Image 1: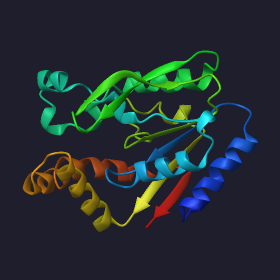
Image 2: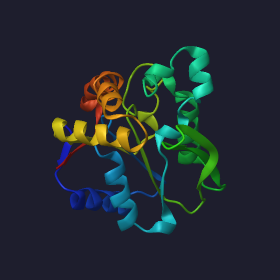
Image 3: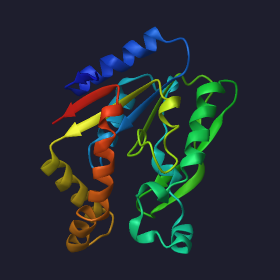
Image 4: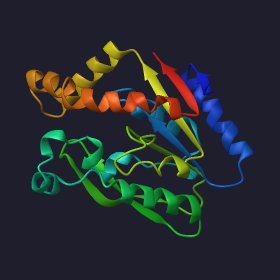
Length: 211
C-alpha cells in the first residue's frame, strides 16, 4: 500500500530520508494529471535541497516537435502519450541511473515556444538526487512501461480537481490561448490524458496530497 504524505514539508523530509539512506544516485518520479502541481512540488524541493547535488529532469523535454506531430497527424493531441519520445526518455533515465562519471545532457521544453531545446539541461557527475516529473511515468502502455524500473520512488500528486482545472486553464491562457480555447483544451485533450494518469495512481509508492 502506498505511503500518504500531506504537506510539502513532509515531502521534503521524505526526500532527505532517501538521500541519507541510499548509497546510489536517487531518481524520484513526480507523477500527476495535467495541472496537479508537479512543478510546484519540484520547485519547492529544488529550493530546499542542496543545489549542487540536486537536479530536475522534466519528461516534457521529450515532446515530439511540432513538425513531427504535424507529419504524424497528432498536433491536435499534443500531450497525449504517443506524442512523446518515450524511449528516448527511458534511455536518458537509465543512463542517469548508471553513469556517474560523465556529464549527461538532456532537452528542456519551453511552453512559450511549444518546443524543446536539445542539450539545454545537464546532470553533473556529483549530482546525487534527480527529480523527474511528468504525466506518464507510471503508464503501462504506449512504450512507457519501463520508466518505473528506473525510479527509486514514484510520487503521485493528488489535488482537488476543480482547483487543478482552474490552474490548468489559467496556464493555457498565460501561454497564448484564448479563454475559450483554454477551456476547450483543458476539457478535451487534457481531460482524456488526465483520465489515463488517474489509472496509474495504484502503481505509485507515495501519494502526496496538495492543497
